[in-house]
Length: 80
Image (cartoon, rainbow, N blue to C red; front, side):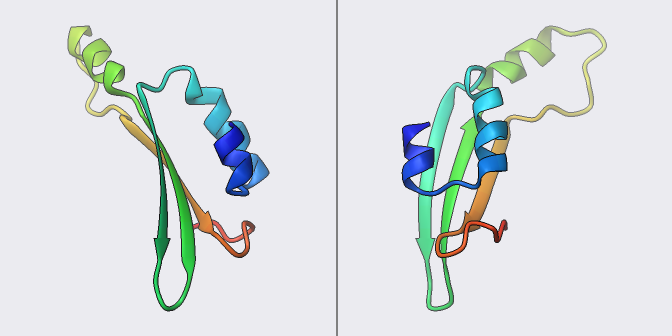
């Protein structure tokens, strides 16, 4: 969560991110810059969810394995 604060993640994103952080197998952060704007990105990866779904009968049609958060680096009120 320290990284989230350092890169000025929007408050509502921080709340959602933290609420599922304990379940994530991997946490990824990124920065993208082009001539128009700069974007911060944070992802939660849930590999263990696939194992859980595989054991279920009947299996669900889909499973969320990644949750991503993107926002403008110069104005965190602009979510992407």
